Image (cartoon, rainbow, N blue to C red; front, top):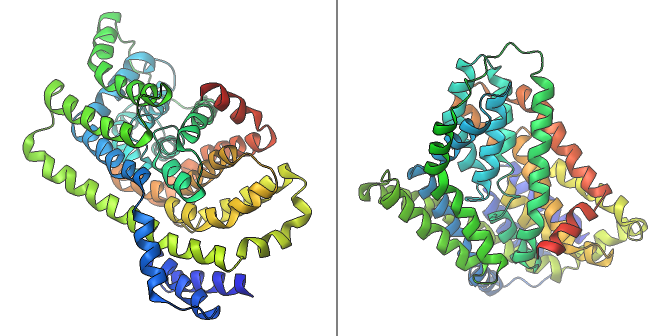
Amino acid sequence: MTLVVFIVSLLGAMAIGVPVAFSLMFCGVVLMWYMGMFNTQIIAQNMIAGADTFTLLAIPFFILAGELMNAGGLSRRIIDFAIACVGHIRGGLGIVAIMAAVIMASISGSAAADTAALAAILIPMMAKAGYNVPRSAGLIAAGGVIAPVIPPSMAFIVFGVAANVSITQLFMAGIVPGLIMGIALVATWLLVVRKDDIQPLPRTPMKERVGATGRALWALGMPVIILGGIKAGVVTPTEAAVVAAVYALFVGMVIYRELKPRDLPGVILQAAKTTAVIMFLVCAALVSSWLITAANIPSEITGFISPLIDRPTLLMFVIMLVVLVVGTALDLTPTILILTPVLMPIIKQAGIDPVYFGVLFIMNTCIGLLTPPVGVVLNVVSGVGRVPLGKVIVGVTPFLVAQILVLFLLVLFPDIVIVPARWLH
């Protein structure tokens, strides 16, 4: 019965339009009332404890780094570099989109920010070259959701805090799956455009290619510094976020000189707004998370799926299907914060590697950014690229299918994630 109270109160609040953070708090209040332990101090203490975590400091700094990267010209130089390398290939602008998405993912970790930057520059270029615009928009959206999988990733930070899992291990484990997602998108793109009448860009002369590489070198150095510092143990993920923000500020203002002092208040304000939304969600989720544990809800769920506990692969299939459905209605961060405290005890009882589960769980929630009716990244591409949302949904379908196939491939073959993660860590 406690599980029913939890689900009905949470979904009921969201169904009438209550914001997710307040829905989580309401759900916590209802659970306390049902268990006869209503106490406002529990809410206040858990919300304060939710924000009082050193690891979560990485979130505002990585968000700020992403905003500085876009405002300072780093994103555009990465795209120019990708065009110089592969723009002349048939369907090359699509490959440019994925190549740039993977590089930018290793810098900002924000799906919405990366997608907006890619869509603003590449969709007009792809339309001019004769590409199918809705399909191009769909590809850029699918490429944008790689950002939370390849480190540095705010999604991994939130999951790591909620699940008490090493964020450094999550970062290292996300590299190979993120690259596989990119390869799958390239293969799908080349398959769907093989009969299209498109005009490849002229081959970039070697001199210009070297010049584009040189101009992008400072931007390309950012992921090396971040991941290299974490891997070498020089910095923690939180300290790496600070380094990333300072580096993006230095490159944007001193090297590229596109970021002006007058631009900083707007950039910082935007980063602060995004941070406030995420942090309030985290704080509210800690209330419901504490009560989920107090109400012993994971044990209730375990009772329903106990036949699957001894069959971890089948259990992962079922969980991934559930998360896939939830992702159609919830954004990435709420999905992580709501489901993590419920699922982690089950994962541990089944003997599934928490880091492996975390990577697949985040991949799944990222795919949710592409699924209507919520589909945050779909809305970003539609708005920035000025493509009707219905057409973007049609255009993204083959790439969405490819991402889902990659997800379930990794369910079947967990060593693809686990072995490289152990080697990299």
